[in-house]
Image (tube, rainbow, N blue to C red; front, top):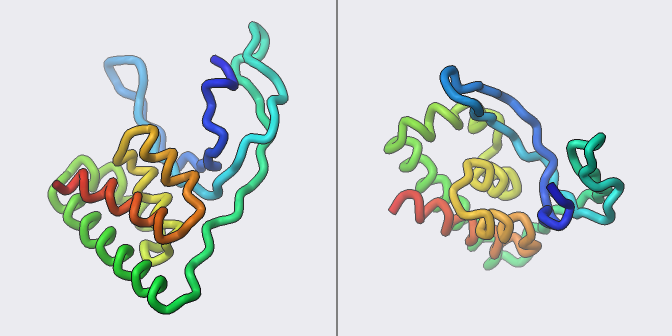
Length: 155
C-alpha cells in the first residue's frame, strides 16, 4: 500500500503468461525480467483515486564481466555449475519444468546476466536472497549468490 514497502532496486518485467485458477481467486503469472532499475523518487502515493503508488526509476548498469583470466574462469565455472544444477532441478521437478520451460527457451543460459535473472525469476529463494542478487554489482559475487539459490533447491 505504501512506497516505503518497496525495495529501492527492482527490475522491469515482461508478463509472458497469465493463468487464473478456476475455482479460487488468484492465479499464476510467468514473467521475464529485462533490466534492473533503482527507485529515485516518489511521484504519487496510494490514495482512494490512485490504486498504486507511482515512482520514478533509473536504469542500472549491469555488473561488468571480469577482465582478468583467473576471474573469467571462475565465472565460467560458476555458470557451468548453475546450469548443471538447474538441469537437475528441472529433471526432478515436473512443476518447475512446466512453469519455466517456455521462459527457459527465451534465455541464453551462458549469459551471466540472463542466467541470474532466470534463476531469480524462478523464485528460488526468500525475498531477501532474491533482493541480494538484484543489488549485487560484482558479477562473480552475484553468480555465487545465484549458485547458492539453485543448490538449496537441488539439495
